[in-house]
Image 1 (cartoon, rainbow over the protein chains, first blue to last red):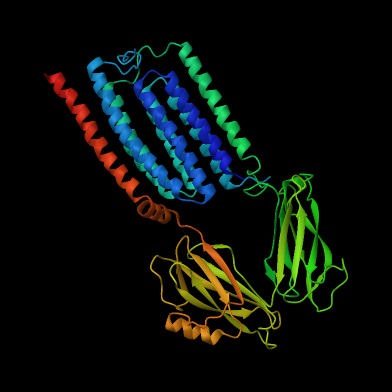
Image 2 (image 1 turned 90 degrees about the horizontal axis):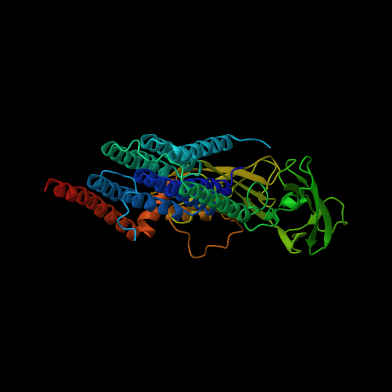
Length: 100
Length: 410
């Protein structure tokens, strides 16, 4: 029997892989993909809870998360591309002007 | 322990999702990362279908695997960032990053399993602890079913265990011990029946059947050995009992049965008439139930349901229902003619009697429709706000990319 805990555990694993990706990779694009992975893991737990509680509100929130993620990707990729044009790299270690 | 198709699909999709996610993070080439991310998205879409969220599965494939990934691939190609130089070196930062990731996974996983320990598998109910349930009402002479879920009584997972529960019939105080047998070797669900006899005289204790009359109550007190709390189940003995499933899917038949000795008027197979009402839409349908045998006193019949949002005509033989509706069946003995008259008039008159027997069934929710209802009714303003946000993000992305282009040209 697959219960809600299985889905939540899978969601936890995917989220942690995303966190590890953000912390270890230096390529801004891959960091971005890892963030998408984390958002998807959260979506999975939203839907698992929605099913568990018999309430569709969780599914509505997943729709919102998807929309926000799409907006974030559009703006984020535009920023990465403009940084790349200016500095010739997508390595975040080389883009540390905001570091104090 | 049997492995169902659902479990196979879940484990396959989960394994694929985790492998693909690791591929996103570990692959050196950004294009491979992007392709692995598409794989993860598809696996998650499959899991959404398993979770009965078909609309979101489609949205996941269209939005993520379609639009977002195309954007990513465009950016990667545009930046020629396939292989980022200087990424190969193994740093302390990377080590700490992985360590932190693993700690996080273990922590969340442990939390999930502590929080849902008693809830997973076939153990206990949502609130934890044993659950005792029995037929709510029976007619004299019928048998009541009793079910108990209690993982602590599953003493041996190799054999079918048994539990004994003492039932007491009121007002005669006749006691009977009913033995419940586990439905499988390791299910922790125990089922049994309580037999009754239609008899005005109180029977002897432990003679195998309760001697009951309409108006009697059969009660069981079951002690939860962990907390010392008692769970109570009450079976009422009535003249008429109506039964239907607790849930029905639209387009399926709603099976209704009525037990009534009074309606068993002759040696031939008699009929009774009930009326089924759809709560939100107000549609009413009369259903004729036929006796299962010449003198059984049990009447069965079915009402066709059809998925639809517009309420259908009264008494046309088909109940139009959608997810979330409640169908209520009423049986009023000797009142069939009046019900039919009321149905053609549209409303029951003011002298509507309190029904003798009633049962209700929930219509299982049709998913996409309920999501849309929630989105456009309950969450209309957030939905508008998100739409505006998306528009702003689109304009913003174009502006950011365009502005730098001008600078480069200057």
